[in-house]
Structures are given as C-alpha cells and as structure tokens.
Image 1 (cartoon, rainbow, N blue to C red):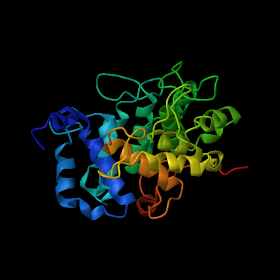
Image 2: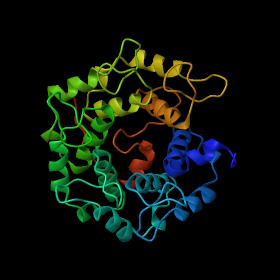
Image 3: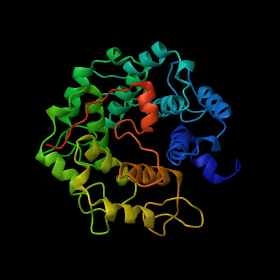
Image 4: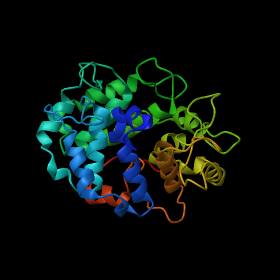
Length: 301
C-alpha cells in the first residue's frame, strides 16, 4: 500500500528490506515470486553519483544499503551492471585513518560498516582498494574483556557486533587473531531457557539472534555448541500460522526482518526444505559458490 504510514516510515531502509525478502524467498526455493527485471531496475535507480547506493531513491548513499544493493545484484547474477571501480572507490573512501569505516559522509563509525565495506569490496573483487590490515587492527581494538565485540573500541559486547566482526575478519582471513575460549563461550551463552538466543546478557531472546549469534558460531566451527532442537522449536514458535511470517518472539507482530533471520537460522540448523545459507555472506550457498567468494572458516578442534 503506497499510501500507508508503514510504507513511508520504512522508506529509508527499503533496500535492506528488499534484500531480506528476496533472500528469504531464495531460502524457501521460490525466487520467482519477485519480478527480477523490475527488482533490478529499482535497485539501480537507487545508485548515487558517488557510486554508493541509498536505502531508496530519495535518500543518500550509505554503506549499509550499498552492501544490500550488491547482495541483491549478486543474488540475481547482475553484478555486471555496476562499475566495480566506481563503487569500490566510494567504499574505500569511507575508511578512516584508524582502519575503521564511516557509514556515510557524516562520519558515524561502527563495526557494522567494517563488515559492509570488506564484504562489498570482496563482491566487487576489489579488496585491495582498502587498507585491510588497518581494518583488522580496528576490529581487534573493538574486542572486550568478556570475549565479545562492540560497535567501537570500549563499546558493549553485542551479538550483532560479534557477527559483523567475526564475518569481517573471516573475509580478511584474520580469524586466528581473535578466536579463543572467551569469544566462543560468550556466543554460546546467548541461548536462553526458552531455546532462543539473546543479544547480550540479561536480555530477552529474539529470533534475529538466531542468525547473528548462530552464524558466528558456524563460521568458527562451533555450531554444535547450541541446542539445535530447542532453538528450532523457538523459531517455529514465532511463526504466525495465519500470516506466515516470523516475529521476534511468540505472539508478536511478524515482519520481513525477523522472517528472513528466522529462516536463515533454520537454514544454518539444516531444517528440511530450506536452501543452505552461507554464514559469512548471508546469501544462499549456491550464490556464494557461483561467485567464488572466499572467506576463512574454522573447524572444531
């Protein structure tokens, strides 16, 4: 409904919403539900003269939405539509002297943006455009005494930041520098008595962490450290059997964000009928294989 409040309130992050929905359909084995030509045309309409992509046509370019746009193009085998050098220059231009990346021209720093930058450059085959050793050093500085990672040095450990840091370090081939019992323990302790995972100690479980925490454990070769049947039951208990979507917790309102991350978590757990998803790149394994994307993975010793 183009006249609804929800449509306009979500306009600024629509690119990510399209990525969540499109990837969810691929996990379900039904990518044809979306019109590829129409979808790709809309994505390209959101590219700005800088080379970056915006959340929708009338907004400014941002690293978050640049990655989402590239993920959608990768999903539909359309990366050739972008000028890789131009987009890579936009991404690399957001790196700061300390190795961090700003999300956009206004300068907010967050480890999410480090992941977006390194992943985007990997998709473009332009990792050499950034100072990867400096990026790794910055991520290491965001490590905390409890084993987790924060958004910036000294920031509180959070499962979302753990995912972005572990995945970014995986793309950079630098996982060995940070993996230890503290990190593995912090992630595995995110499972609550409900079976669901939370983002940090003493917080409620939420379906989205079925991806953030679980994918990090998968990348680190410790997927078995989570009670898979309990987590599966929690995610399935969050599905609205009338609307079909998945919510953050049972009986809450469903949305495409939690639907995607719930399906992604179930895919990592090997749930029947779902296409396998890559824990670093958050795309179907078939897409990652087609693109020959490389990232470091650890095995359980």
